[in-house]
Each structure stands twice: as C-alpha cells, then as structure tokens.
Length: 222
Length: 226
Image (cartoon, rainbow over all chains, first blue to last red):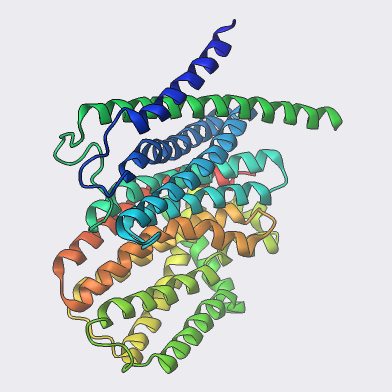
C-alpha cells in the first residue's frame, strides 16, 4: 500500500475515533447547557480550517503573483472553495450552539458578524472569478482580491471580538494564557483539530488534481 | 518622490476636470444621498426615535447613507477610463503608483465633498446632537479615508470585469463591513460622549486605513498592468 493510501485510511480511523471520543470519552463541560459542549469538537476545527484555507488561498495567491504559475491559481481557488464550505459548516454549528445556549440562532454577536463577513469575502472572491473571462487576468485579479481580503481577517477575528463585548465563550488560547478545560477535553479537541486539518489537506489535494486535469482538457480541446 | 506627487496631482486634476464636465459621479453620489436623507427625514424625523436610542440609531442611518452613496459613485474613476478607452494612454503617461495616488485623491475629494454637505444636513434634519464634535470630525475624516482607499483598489479590480456595477458592491461590501461596524460604534460614542469608544474606534480605523493603504500601494501595479 502506498503512503498516501495508508494516510487516507489513517485519516478515516482517526476521525472515527475522534467522533466516538467526543461522545463517550469526555464528560460535558461545566458552564454549558446539557451536552452542547460536545459541539466544540466540531465547531472549533471547522472555524479553524476556514481561516487556514483562507490563509492557504492568500499564500498561493502571493506565489502566483510572484511566479505566474497557473498551478498556484488553481490552488488558490480550490482552497477558497473549501474555505467557504468549512465556513458555512462552522456558521451552522455555531448557530445551533447559540440556539441551545442563548435561545437564539443569530444575534449578530461580534464573532457571528466576523464569520458572516468571512463568508461574504469568499462568496465575493468566487463571484469575481466568475466575472472575468481571460484566464490570466482572472488569476491575477483574484489573487489581488484574496490578498486584500485576507488583510481584513485579523481585524475581524482578533480586533472586533476584543473591542466589543461578546457572548462567545472565551477562546481556547485566551488572554490569561490558561486552559479552562480538563485534560480529556483538550486531548479530544487537539485530536479533532489534527483530524480536520488532515481532511482539509486531503480534499485540497484532490481538488487541485481535478482542477488541473480540467484545465489540461480545456487546453487540449482548444 | 516629487515626480510621483506631480504625476499624481496631474491625474487627480484630470479626473476632477472631466468629472465637472459630466458630473456623473457627483450626481450619483449626491442624488442618492439626498434622496435617502429626504426619505429618512420624512419618515423618521427628529421625533420618532426615543432619546436613549438616538445616538446609535442615527449613527447607523448616517453611515448607511454615506456607504451606499460611496458604492454608487466611487467606482467612476476607473470605469470612466475603461469606457472612454483612455486607460492605455494613462498607463503610458504615468507610473502605476502615481495613477493610484491620483485616483485615491479624486475619490477622497468626492467623499469629503459628500460628507461636507451630507453630515451637517443630516444633523440638522434629524436633530442629531453630537457631544464630542472633535471626535466625530476625526471619525469622519479617517473613516472617509479608509473608505476611499478600499473602494479605489476594488474599483481598479472590477474595471476590467464583465458585470462592473454589481461586482463593485459585491467585492467592496465584505471589505467595508468591518470598517462600517467600527465607524457606527464610534459615531454613537461621539454622540453620547463616551470618549473611550471614540478612541478605540479611531485606533481601529487608523490601523485599517494604514494597512489597506500599504497593501493597495503594493498591489495596484499588478491590477493596473495589462
């Protein structure tokens, strides 16, 4: 079995164990209603992947502007698509959690506002890609937009929630630098983060391969 | 350095001159703002909002009018170049950074002109009392600058795209929303006298404007190149 196939099976087992552990290995955390704390194991990694995907999109955009390699443009667009998917999932899981904890799916809490703007940025990026015909201009203009948009992300993710009061629970790496959860919780959360990152990498590699095959076919037709 | 400024001023002057000939952007900005202001003033007026809600709600309405007026008119500087086919000549005539500075200057003048007319009228018609006027003016100045910087680079991006008008709003809004949140909070703080909110807002808006200026200056040559 090749390394990549082994890694895929490992990913499957890893995520399965994480999901089982999320429900049977940890007790619900204090300060959360009922079993709702378990959503953290899925919501946090997905939010993390949404930002990571965006970071990858931005980095590959910078690389495209430097090297003008079409593969970098493919990487940027695939990563943006995945980032949108994970951002939607993170928003939905967050809304479910908000309903359980504070009886409202959506109240424009600063973090909810931040994730909405992130969604809008992704959607705008994909809209821009759709609106330009010439492939090279499309690649360079979307690269510029990805970089521009990424520059606003630190403001959204770090500045807005800090300046304005938020219902959102304290982040894991909070201002005091201490860890509020018990060790089992942290273990499963870290394992989930690793598992979801692996999932993202796998989807990303497949997406890039599909896109480059599509591009090659398009060029052959021409 | 001075050559850059001379070229930039020439670009801005050219834009202003052509703008005064046709007044398209001014009409778009001005008529939109005045229409919305008239509608809001007529329906809401100075009496309908309770005293405790006034600082915040009136701040929201003010910035909504400013932002949507900006979205209506600020893409004009680049779209005009593409429509009249003068863009290639401009590429030859001035360096990219000078073009960017000139267009930014033009957008700044438009925005400040809009604010100079709209804000006093708004405060008069809606009975908006601002306690920290100095802070409010600073918020307007720096907020307008950040708004102009972001819309300039986005206008440059969409000028070569297919569905310009709609795409300009779609691309600008995610970038402008954080700015909008800060500015609304800051204006509400200036209206009810909380200096701390105003200081926080100014810090955030200045840093956003600064970061966007640097990133725009670096990315504009890429967008402008054919």
